[in-house]
Each structure stands twice: as structure tokens, then as C-alpha cells.
Amino acid sequence: MVLTSGTAGDPTPKAATLAGKTITNNSSWLGAWTPLQPDISGSLTLSVPAAEAVVVRIDAAGALFGPIQMNQNGALEMFAIGANGAVEHDWQKAADVPQSPPADWNGWAGLSGVSSAGGIAVVKNEDNTVQVFVPTSGDVYWSQQPSPGGAPWSTWSDMTSSAGLGLANLTAGNNADGSLSLLGLNNGGVIYTVSENAPEIGWASGWSALNNGGGDPKIKPGYVLGRNLNGHLEIFGADSNGNIWHCWQTDAGGWSGWQELSGVQLNPRLAVARNLGGELQVFGVDSSGNVWTISQTSPGGGWNNWTEIPGATLKPGIAIGQNKDGRLVLFGVSTQSPNDVLNIWQQGSPGGSFGGNWTDMGGSGLDPQLVTASTQDERIQLFAVDSSGTVWSDWQPSSGGWNGWTNFGGSALSFYPGQP
Image (cartoon, rainbow, N blue to C red; front, side, top):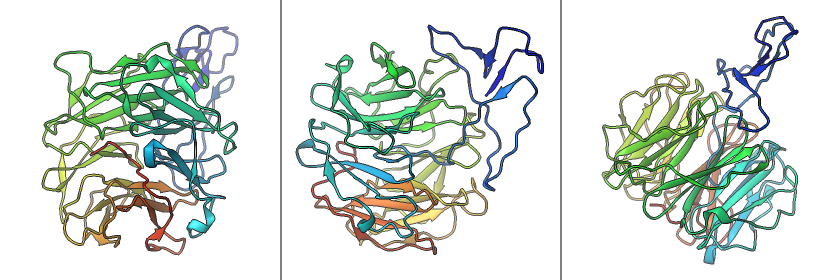
């Protein structure tokens, strides 16, 4: 984002814009980030004209959505729902643990005070504190770290503006200016959203429905949220017939209408990732377990056609990880006995097609709703729960390959309660 007087090299004008928009003190700033070419060398050079300034945001290639986030020190922290809606979390003692074993995690602990009635949302604030949102039978509540990676967590605060909406299956993301947007789905298939006025500066007075017209789709649980390179959030969801729809933030600060990504009918439990080049890519399985994917033609641009990833059939609940070189890796539980976890990755360069043979990772009997994260040293770590709600994990050791499934404890836990 460029801060400029409007004339390169001339500091005399008193007016200034940041990312093409004037900054005011009584309304939201709507400047947009300008994507640069991706870089994996660890070095970046920018030339800045005299009397101008540039604000640079460096993102990891893949964004973390779902019940896991990374603390400021690089330690992962994951959340799950236990018996009677209890909110529990487990977190690494330190970052860059070479093998990621459970001994280097703190173990499951409760965040008491609320009882969840559905899927929770976990997000990181602009100040690097992690914040968790929980839908209850009456309202949405949130708790936050007092400082980045700090404890104890704050007492639960009631977002009373959501009372009566019946929201569950929450998700959250960072807007272009770093503020948060929270989304929730009611049992009528309507998604509601509310945003902070600015990073860490209060919440808008009410929730807005993203399904406003009679022809709008009724979204099923299992919708997902992605973030474009310009900072605009984008939602992907399926209706009751399996048709896939998307809706995205606009330059004017609102949301577009719903548009269909036609061509397939899929289970509503979707997955989305961002390629190294910045293009979003969506994944899902059809009623026969066949795996389908579609990607943007350019960052924030139009869409290619749906293509099938052949060679395996998977249960709904697939997850996407990202290798250190930027290539996406797809994980899922096979529909074929003994129902092991399988993976397949992009061939050639990052952003390439998925090919080659599926790799069997074992893990027979694990729930198909998987969770992935990247460690600070850029290894993929995969999490799943078994039939008793115990968490298991497999990860890429620093030496390469996969470690093998290891018991991470817990009981009656679920990462995505209420989702298919």
C-alpha cells in the first residue's frame, strides 16, 4: 500500500491517500492491498519514491482457517468441542519443535464459562492475540488472549446483537485493514456477518444477512472462508442440492451477491486454500466420493472449470495443507476399507495439477473431518479424532516423509460439531 500526496516526490500537498483511498476519522477506510509476486527465497526488494511511503504486509502462502491458529511465538494452538459443549484447547510449548510430538504440547485444557451449540471460530487479531468465538443456544460469545500467546484468557463476552438469530457453524477472518469479520449460519441456511469498526475497535451495531433475496441460496453447514491477496474475504458453500455458491467482499466495503460455481453437485463440507500465486482453490467430494476442484484464473479473478482428481474416493471432510515449496497437499479419509487417510499433492511447480498416485498414511477408523496446519518451520501437521473423540496427529518430520499417527489425548472431542 502506497502512502502518497498524489504527486510522486512532492511532499507539499496536505492531502494524502493510502492505497488509493483517503483516511477519514468517521468511516471505514477502504483501501486495497496491491498483490506482489510470490517469493520463497526469503528476500524482497522494493523501490519507494522520495516523499512517499509503502506499507508491506507479508503473508504466509496459506492462511489458517478453522479451529487452529499460530501464536506470535510460532507455537500452534488448536481448539475442539468436548462433552456437553465444553470448549477445550491444546497448544505447543514452543515453536520449531523438530518432531511435533505430544510431549511438546501442553495437553487439553478447558476454557470454562460457555457451552457451545455448534462449530467455533478461531482467528488472530492484528496485535497477534488469538480470539475464539463460540455459538451458544442463545447468543455468540468470545474470549481473547490478554497478550500475544498470553494467559489466562479473558472472561467470555456476550455479543448480544446476535441474540435470536440462532447462529451456529461460525467462521472468522481478517479484513483488508486487519479488522475481524465474523460469520455464522442459522438453521434456515442464511449466513449473517458482523465486522469490527477497525482493528480492535468495537463491533458494528448489528449483523447483516448475506442471503437477502428470495432467489438466494440456502447454505448448508460446511461452508468455508478464504482470503484473496487484496485482503477481501470470500465465502464458498453448498445448497441442499449440492450446488456450489460463492460471495465475496467488494471494494465498496460490502458483499457481492451470491453467484454459482456451476458444473458439479457436492457434499456441503468443502475446503479452500490459497495457492502460492495467490489464486484461491476450492475442493469437495460428490455423493460417490469423487474429488473435485476449481481454482481462480488469477488472484481475485474469474474461475476455471471444475476438474476431477482421480484415483481415490473420499469421505466428506477433506483438508488442505501446503508444503514448504508452496505446493498444496490434499488429505482425506478413503471410502474403501480399511478407510485409511490418503494424500495427494500438486505436481511440478506450486499451483500445478494434482497427479500421481495417492499415498496411504494409515489411520484406519479416524473421523474424516481433518484439520491441517503449518508449523513455524513450514512442516505440515495433520490432526484427526477417532470414534471416542480422542485426537491423533501425524506430521512431516524435518527429515522428510511422515512420522506416523500419534495419540494426542482428549475424550469426546470434535473439531466440527454439527457439520456433515
